[in-house]
Length: 286
Ligand code: C2E
Ligand code: CA
Ligand code: CA
Ligand code: CA
Image (cartoon, rainbow, N blue to C red):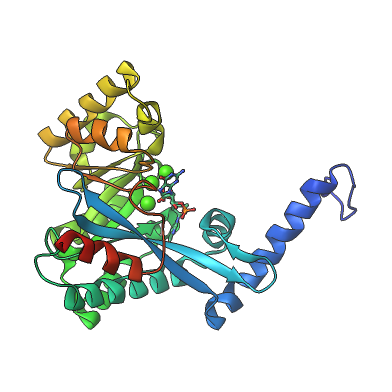
């Protein structure tokens, strides 16, 4: 930790210093890492809860760091957010993901899926505030030829709390073009439920914390009631409900009975290479 007002280092907490140094090192290495192609994307399937068919996949970025090995997004997305590198990095993630979705739409057998495969891409607050968001997204979709309806952009609930019209306008424009907007980590941000009507979202993505009480039979009855209420509200507003972090068959069964639409989690598949989706889709066909 740096002493207030000076450049002298105090060795009060060596571990905190080591973390700060790593953070600093990672932050300065980010731009070159993007140029050198050290980022890659894993895809985690989303399945329909009623019949288990594949609905699409969420793109999750990783950094193959030459010294530290593979780093998860929690290690570097906040740093990229802070420096603004998230904008070019996010554009890269979008382009790769849209290309992958286009490939799936062309290559996977018709009828093996519950409709054409869709792709979910995360947007962080800085990207949401960036003036090029709509133009960049439209440009990528048009150049690659993916229908806007095959793309879902995930925005966290906390990024939209208290959002004014200026912030919502780009999302509204994208939604009008047919892009789905999902409210990610729903339930963690204390947002006013009545506020949902104001947001241009078509999907609620229920946070993992809600489904943790459902890992066993019998499930926590209060958790069941809460999720039942959220699903009823979401459906009355014509929003689809996705649940994340489904780790057991018991959870999947509870969530299906509660009327959730799609699910994602280790019970179905971990995030993995794009080929994983081919296997799952083919498995559906038999
Ligand atoms: P998220 O959007 O909430 O993504 C879900 C996280 O839950 C992922 O962590 C995923 O690997 C993990 N997960 C999936 N199924 C299960 C399960 O059954 N059990 C448990 N315990 N965890 C599960 P990951 O890949 O480490 O990503 C962390 C966060 O980083 C994401 O949270 C998202 O907010 C952010 N992120 C990832 N990729 C991008 C990106 O391209 N751009 C931006 N802006 N953020 C990203
Ligand atoms: Ca997400
Ligand atoms: Ca989430
Ligand atoms: Ca989450």
